[in-house]
Length: 636
Image (tube, rainbow, N blue to C red; front, side, top):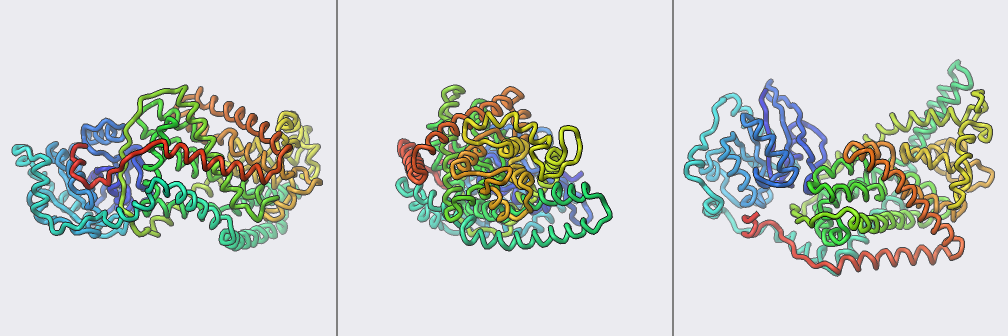
């Protein structure tokens, strides 16, 4: 087999090149430790098969981080493989430290200089002759010259002759010598970070950073849930409802029993349609987040919040996992593998379930539209702020319980670049595909179980969804409803929705729709939830408490399973029961507060206090930042 290993510093474009070579859709980000372990895939070129392995980012073969150890161990076991060393043209001096180590180890190396088209700084033909290796200038983001690289790889395996790097080993070419060589073959003295520095003077200003960050975040929520998002949603909702009606008519025409018809329409189609109606908002939200990440802004957010995170027991490395938590808690827990400090990893995992994942978004949209439709985006924005605030408080608590030494945070700070829309669409579509797969598996499976429990009595006779009080579901949920009454969430229907959320948060909305017996239309669902005659209905106060409880209580089964796999059964059980207890406590306090004070005053006070708290933590810590293109970097 023709084996190829992709090696390079973090944020040089390894995973992007991996995707270009193998036509894959792996996540590529401007973050430290995005590639948690090696990934591999085959591709064909000129009737030959090549196996490509993408290793985690590394600065040195003797690095101490978990990612560097994984990469170095793999290279030691596969010395015969062809190594494609990816370097960033904007940081070539620093990236070549690893190149020298690879050459002195006697490995066969092709140097792929990524983003070379952005700034033509060096004469790469001369550098190729000096190092005695092949150099290919590529742009992995735009898929430029990737076929040229494939051709070079093909030629090496056709010749089957190892390159001669013994002269480098004998002469002990060091970094200082390499710097002199690079200076001698330099074409121009343009600073590739000139424009980036000017933008950073504004965006990273200690007085402007948090206001700008909050404004950007609020703008994303406004575009997602405001007039633009509503228009986008209406188009999708019309399309999905047309499909639903078409399938419903087909089922009604089939010569099958009424029970089977009811099962297919209300148990299968209805549950899928209810969740599909939230796809538009998830598309918009993830598109904007991926947009900010692709232009280079999100890595700066990680850098600026590093000081704050250290105050509460986390680091900038943790922020990647925390940001992933806004997408999916399960995936976010997996990314904590790049945290080599065990206690830091444990604290990060314990905080992650308090971050509001995208699966909770459908619940927020439905309930917030009941009484706060005109300011729905503001309400959802406040919920996300609240989740961040609770995460900060819990992190401070866990920092005093689970102590560890402070770690240095090294982050590649990329240049600001124009967004690659193709990459953004691919990253967004991967989230949507994952969401749809969940609909087709877990959600559909439990929707069927829910339909059975709702339509059959304890004696297993069919009663239909209209007789909820006689169903197995009512019998089971009614036993627990008194407990939720202490926090203002009375009613067996609400209890069912909460319990279904343990399976998957999307199931909360499915449960509400099925219990109230409405179609997949969000408008009809919202109307049913404010009618006292409905099986499950809300008041303004109970809707707020319900949303906060959904925000804080136990993560879904897949997230708990991932926590169990990563940290053990005891930690998973602790997360489950502790978050239920915290959710009950906060909702109990909230219930008694809302019944005694004006809601608007409460919301305004909460947002003001939340912002002031963020400012207070931010300005207690001062730090300098390095753009990665200075001479001091050779000391890394």
